[in-house]
Image (cartoon, rainbow, N blue to C red; front, side, top):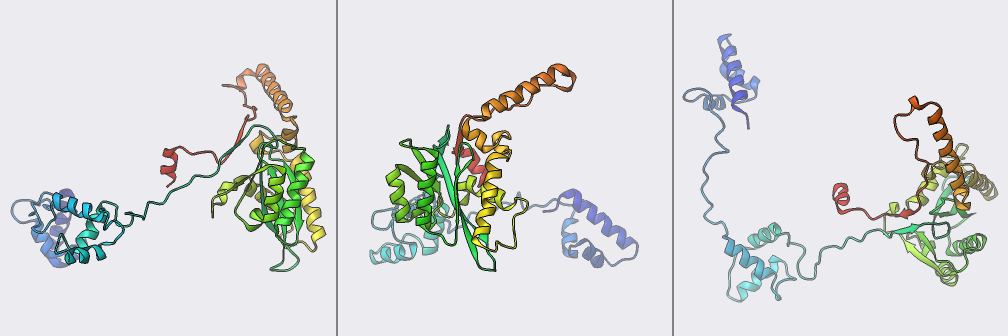
Length: 350
């Protein structure tokens, strides 16, 4: 709808064009209206406002009353008809000698009540949240996954198995094989469990829903070791975000052979060097820039305390450089896998 101000401006321009010798219908075309519209705007005194918003419209004769709409909903949700669509409800009512409304009216009323598809046994889909785990020390929660490494030719891959400790981000186990299998995963988990000395402590192993993650041999090993299984939701890679992030760090590492590894031995050697760098040299941004191995062994606390002392001393020596507190070097006491979102955050994301 065009405001009165814009209409007046358009009429003024049209009048000026007509005075200058233009045909009125041509001037209207330049503005983007018809000559009949211009005449309607200028009928009577001055330029008229749009009357559509305030126009009085007659109530439709055939409009369903509130009582009739309530009756339709009651019938559609009754025991006999709650699992039937309107296309079957209306004929069934006719066989009983009853006519309530047309089939299209049934559909319209059910759609307005958000019951067109979710009635009877057709319940609303249940949204399940991700599996949440909290680690307050090493070897409480592990995340693991498998990724492809390019091989010597197109279509040939090697498979990198990686197990990551959630609390420290340390790689506690890895292997490279020519295929994916639950047997390889079982061996890897057993080795990592023994190397880390987990013992009888409760350990959660989180993975996605791939077939190697749910193979019988792996599940049997986990049961034997007393490891609790945890899985991501189907087709939701973010539920295993720490493992996915580690793979990105691996494949964006300088020197990563994007053209492929020539042999399995070459792939294993490269991954060995990467794991050593990642665990002992990499300053992890999620750990206040200490190495995962330092966090895993407990050395990180002393390191960040020393950093804090350095900053405090710098503030004392040159106070004018500081307008507030020094940098916070404290490490989080707990790390959460898939933290539960507040309802407001879920609505904003959707």
